[in-house]
Length: 67
Image (cartoon, rainbow, N blue to C red; front, side, top):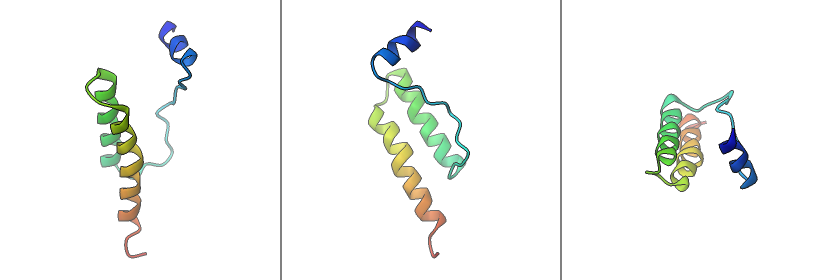
């Protein structure tokens, strides 16, 4: 709980892993891997952002190709 308070004091907001829609298991696994590396100190937040935002856009394009 102390860690939660410190994060909130630093202006960070917790986000639950509760998405009603995900583009694919591949997308979910990529975001999960990027988050794990970030949490372990071996990855950057930019890689998490890229895995989430850019890969979501890629999945969207694939799902709507030829529409």
